[in-house]
Length: 187
Length: 187
DNA sequence: GTCTATAATTTGATAGAC
DNA sequence: GTCTATCAAATTATAGAC
Image (tube, rainbow over all chains, first blue to last red; front, top):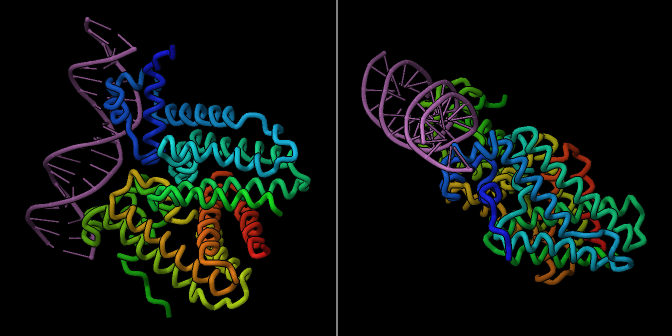
C-alpha cells in the first residue's frame, strides 16, 4: 500500500508543477495553498520563505532525476543505448508530467531568482553533465574532451527541445531532436 | 548622426533586457519607469497594458533577428557556412547583449504568459524553423524531411545552450555547442 | 506627454489563538 | 498543524490636472 503523501509533499508537488508551467515568479504561496486545500499561513509553517520552497523543489527534482538515470557505467560499448536512456528520462518528464524540465525554466529566468534557487538549478546541470560524461566515456572510445563536448551538446539540445515543444504545442518536436541525438553515436 | 531613441524605444529596450534576465513575470511597469526615468503612469501612456509591452518587445525582437539573418538562400552549397551564420546570430545575442534569447525565456514560462505573448514567442520559433529549413535545403542535398529534423535540432540546441551558459555562468558552453552543430554539416 | 493621486488586488510574511 | 487576522509592500491600471 502506497503511503499517503504528506502535506509537505503535496506542497512540493504543487510548487513543482507551477514552476514548470509558469516559472518561479509565476507562483505564489496562496496559489499553492488553494490547490493543496490549506491556508497560506500553513504553507509558511512547512517552508518559512518562498525561496525555501524553490530550493526544496529543485533538490528533490535533482535527486529523483539522477536516481532514475541510475549507473552511468552500465552501458559498456552501447553508446547509443546510453544516449537513448538519458533522453528517455527527459521524455518522461515532458510527456508524463506534461511539463518542461524544472531547471530549463529556472535556468531561463536565472537573473530573477533568489541566489540559492539559481544555485540549485546550476547543480542540476552540473550533475547531469557529470553523469553524461561518465556514460559516454564508459560506452565509447571518444576522448575526454570529446565526451565533454558531446555531453554539453546533448543536455543543451534536450533542454531546448522541451522548451520548443511546449511553445509550439507539439511533442513530436522533442522526439525529432531525440532521434537526431541518437545519431551522435554514429560518428 | 544616430537618432536619439524615443521614450517608447527606451521602454522597449528596458523591458527586453528585464524579460531576458528575469522573465515576463519578473519585471514591472514601475521597474521599467525607474530605469527610463519616468513614472509608471507614463509607461501606460505608451502601452496600455503589461501584455502590450510583452507583445511589442517580442515582435521587435523577431523582426530584428530575422533581418539580421538575411537571405536563407545565400549559402548555395555552403552548408556549414549557413549553420555558422545562424549560430553567430545567437552568439551575438548572448555575448553582446549578455542575455539569453528572449524567446527561450518566454517559451520556458509559456504557461504563465498572457496568450498573445506566448503566441508571439511561438511565431519567433516558427519563423526561425522556416529560415533554417530554407537555408539547409538551399545549401545541401538533404531531403525535406532531413532538413526539417536538422532545423529543429539546431534551434533546440542553440536555445538550450544559451540557458545552460547563463545558469552555469560560462559562455564557453555556448561555443562548445556551436562547434558540435557545425559538424552536422559533415554527415 | 508627464505628472499626482488613487483604486483594487496580490504578494510574502508574521503574530497569536486554538 | 492549521487557522484568523493583519501588515507592509508591490503590482496593474485608471482618472484627471497641467
